[in-house]
Image 1 (spheres, one colour):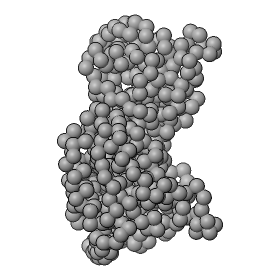
Image 2 (image 1 turned 60 degrees about the vertical axis):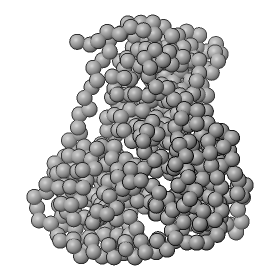
Image 3 (image 1 turned 135 degrees about the horizontal axis):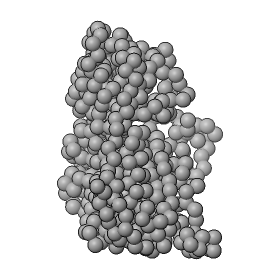
Image 4 (image 1 turned 180 degrees about the vertical axis):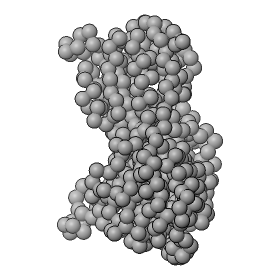
Length: 540
């Protein structure tokens, strides 16, 4: 029998949220959503507030990503919601199960010109799984509960619900729906067997695992499948760390060699997008494993495309009864390429040059980061190096903006990560361009006693634009920033701490001070603007 609850719209919404395991609210204050704050205050439900609504949405997304449960952002009407749309869009591309609860101008005088009167739904519908306006307070628990179920159902993603002012403030009685079980999607057994047979018979198979492997709690099944086939594994997004760096089948630095020579490429839990050359691997047969039928690539026709619960599919791969090709020589060949690349990278990460090369920053970070540290990438050129030089040792320890490539995630992700892991190292890797998007939210971290370390790669340019533009046109415009700007002093002014590093030899001590500080601490590393990540362009 359903529980009956009574209260204003905020209390009704919070009851449904708590039933679904939501444990905190990220927000920026606004009068339209006061009842949600009142309900949270009365129950001691944690509220974390920010200086820009995008940070609230990114913080909710970090919680959703790291904890594999719903994250909540509460945004006031009009500009509060529109300021959060980039965060919603990132969550949409990242399949992050967040709920944005929006305030809304009063419905009873709609069209009369109330403060911040805007119909949000046409704006948010393209980047959410579900968007709805609640017109009666007694409907709030049902709508919120249904939206959260939709967010958690593969393929996961964000949902949006807004509450007109009079609906949020009105008192009503309503039934609290039972939390619906998320049913596992059963893949077509014939398609699963076909995919497994292709992997088993491949002479040079490669497996690439992405974020949905972590989101679907399929890490153990991935390892079992990889070991059963003895297939080399590469990862991207939150797939990173699914196999620890010392696992004999874990590879990071030989991907180009592997994909050039592979005859079967198995992509699990990530789209065939620009990060994977749009699924074009030459003559190799492509197996694309996705968590829902709607995620099958429309621009490629894979040799096999099982769609369903990733744990079930990968477990079926591991249990494949057919014969398997011995991949010992193939794995050894890639290991040789991996070791050679690792030797080259070690030299770059130890470079004593001044100005500092970005690789040296990551060489020093590798010495101070704990195995369970959560590392956050927010930037273009500088963060591109992180993918090459940092190797997460555990799943659920890497956050980046994902395929949408939205800058400004850093402080919101840091807040969500610190709330999730109070006792771990939280390290934000930030380009100096990205610093302009969210650095003021250091104040939110300071005020709410959420210490993190921020490492800024400060080369004074938009690196992924300046160098390609010069290569294309022989000149560049709109690609310069102030050289050697003191971002550490910005953080100090906001109540944190920091320092600028210009010599490679000073990097290690600065990072150790940062992680010992116990407050938001920014290490502002002046890097060589001529040393850009080796890619011709960020356009695709």
